[in-house]
Amino acid sequence: MTALPLGERIVLQAGGLEVEVTPAAGGRVAQIRQDGREWLVGPDDGRAEAIAWGAYPMVPWAGRIRRGQFTLDGRTWQLPPSLGAHAIHGVGFLRPWQVVSRTPHALQLALELGNGPDWPFGGRVEQEIAVDPGSLRLRLRLTAGAQAMPRPVMGWHPWFRKLSHFDFRPTAYYPRDAEGIATLPLAAPPGPKDDCYLCATPVVLKRDGQRAILRSDSDHWVYYDEPAHATCFEPQSGPPDVFNLRPEILSPGEVVETWFDLDFE
Image (tube, rainbow, N blue to C red):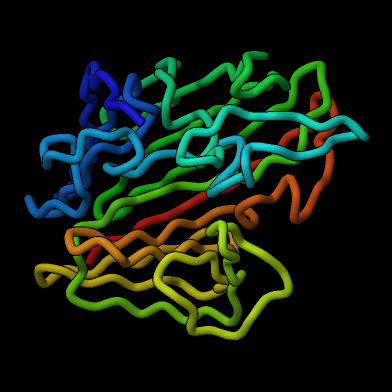
């Protein structure tokens, strides 16, 4: 997976919170600074690959789709592999997003999903990034186009700089098989440090004397703590490989939404 051109860096600021956004680089939050302290692995940290920095939207799926294959209405579809043999994290983080509107405190972005080989079902995604003093609000809204599609899973993939402490209290997780793909039935935690968990309570992070409280309307969280330089807590509206694990249809014109809030203390 190659690097992306950064393009313009748009800074939103409120009080001591500064959030840097790069619409051209997958519509992602490139950096979060609270009172000057950086929370994310950013584009200037030597992590050039698109998958490995910032906090990017995962849409219209999150995690891996096994070998990029799934069946919808009796027809088998093939998405291009993007990580090994599998298709990972959707297409939104690899494409430039359009700036719809901006103020000093908020940014509205949009992405037309199109009907290409990496996503042949169309649809439009809108993203809102807004700041208040000490708070970052992220919103995603997908509207299906004229064609039915597999019901999406959406979320965010923040690459937090290595944490000094965190409080994460899941109730179950999806075990992975030999291909590294989430499976059913659910198992009781703890699991390894790269799995999708069910967690209905806020996730609390600490580093450099600061604390962040993560909340979402989604109860699926991927916890990834294998790298020495970063820890990821990724809220998403359903499991990896959702088009195979939980196949459902999103009808033309139907809308799905999700949100993610980060409060810094």
